[in-house]
Length: 104
Ligand SMILES: [Zn+2]
Image (cartoon, rainbow, N blue to C red; front, top):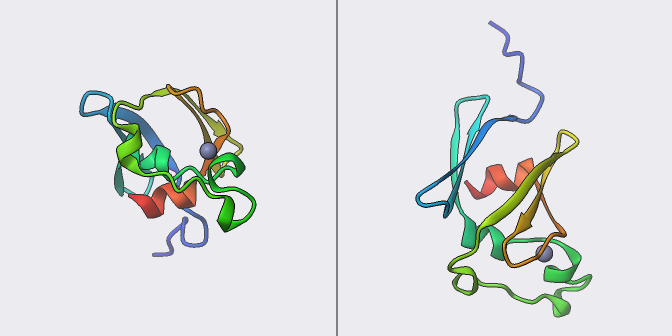
């Protein structure tokens, strides 16, 4: 039987904060479950501020710097990414569904 979703990326079916709001759990519509630690997710921010336009400008963020980080707001951007606002005030991070999937 042909799989309807063969040629397109999986899409998040639900998002939930677990483990005392320190883990973002994503249930994908293909049944895969990603559990992403928020400190690692914050450190993996790929925006221009965090990563710079060149490798030499990267802030080189580490998860240990964000022990108590929380998500203030999260919103879907189109059908390809999430915009996450962090409790440290950082709000320029865009996380593509593909990168979230690869992290989890
Ligand atoms: Zn950033």
